Length: 139
Image (cartoon, rainbow, N blue to C red; front, side, top):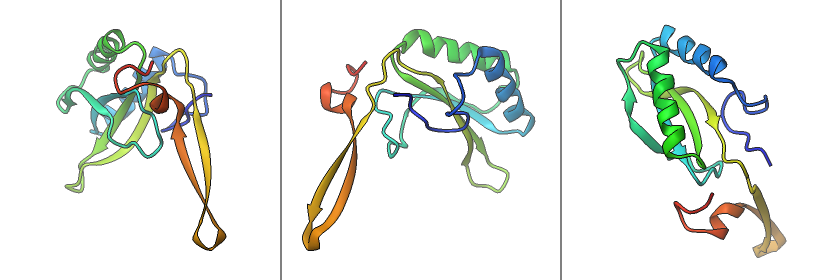
């Protein structure tokens, strides 16, 4: 199952050349860029680990791609994403994010259905990877 989070998630994985063009687009907009990673890609897990510090003053897409490649080497079986932040209104808000690396195997999610008070049905989305192994050992 291919995880679909962020921009471009329904397209084939981006090449480094395409990633570089997206980084250049973000830099042209004066957005700050950060690289994040996780082994728990649950849709409600919005707090991924940050790779290094945000790249506020970096203006060269090659330098950011270098950091992405360093993260790929250090975290080969993790999800990596780029997050771009716009602070033009004084608020750091994410305006673009997309996945740049996936683990070789994506176990997917299961939906659990529960009947609660009043015969109401409640659905919960759970990650198979979280059920199988503890954090840091999932992939």
